[in-house]
Length: 479
Image 1 (cartoon, rainbow, N blue to C red):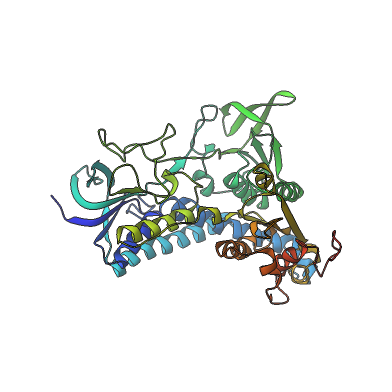
Image 2: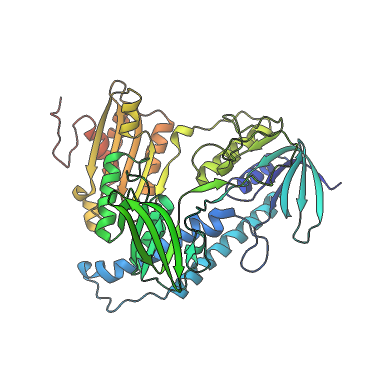
């Protein structure tokens, strides 16, 4: 038998590595198990987010956006850039360098905090034991007073479009293209599909997004979703709603995709196809047969509001449990669980988890949509302010989009905030903090914002809730 730990975490993604570090900071003997093999053949930490998700995709999104700015927008500012081209190989190398720096940083944080890093595949074999199989097939069993399952998720594959190396890829493969495809198909108009489609659209691909649902971004406030769809269409993304993919075939270096829509059977040909239809929990093989941890029919681990499973001392966090599959949600759950294991009281407010789509402009939201509130029978009042009326947005050449605040009509308490515009992902934190403290729209309206800033749009939206916006005409008369 190997060493015994107070806490063993299975998975070193944004939930797992944060849980392990926090546990060690609380004075617990903590270990974190990871099996991910990086490009150099070594085990790396950070999970999907750091290696093939949040971070590398943002590196490509930022590079492609700067390329478009230099090519099309600099001239308006008086900047003569001349002919601008993109070196895809160099862009990818920069992306890989960023990933390497960050994954190495986690290893350094483990050492600094006294977390034991264990390489291999972890499996819960009893309530308080974890079996680890290394890359050579050797197994070691560890005892733990507490176990945290943070195994993450993997892309969903669909039968009509089986992955084919170099032609039909998932989100991971889309981060490794060596050149810009002329015709790119994307299945799924969710967050991942729109982000990856945006990258290659900016670099010159003719991008078609096939979405089976009839509505665009149904989880986003309707007015914001409509505005976002309009902006993406203007940029050149061809988003086909109600398009259900039924089959595909490869023909040399091409992919032929068959789908049905309101006009019947259709067919399109692409040079590359990205499948982005969602993710599923990675729980198969993480729990040994005979261990009574409960899972649902989709493979998610059942947990309570504080991420306890039905087995005492065993917790589960992140993508393998209920709730949005977001890195920051997993990290906060990791902190909560570590604090609870250390004997502290901790809870998480699931009503204030922000979401961001890193297209350009960005789309960000927290809390209820207007349609959510109406479905629950809550009478609301809303305030919206367009960036077209913002001095800083004009100076930034970023006047597209708007900020919207939804408040309870009776109490004025903020129920949701929704932003589409430059730096929306940064500004949404104002809504998160306000809602975390139970703020009213009036609280934000009475707050002094720096001028000129993009955030003034949030201030004006809060003022607009009661018809008091200063820098636009109000729909309501001032009381």
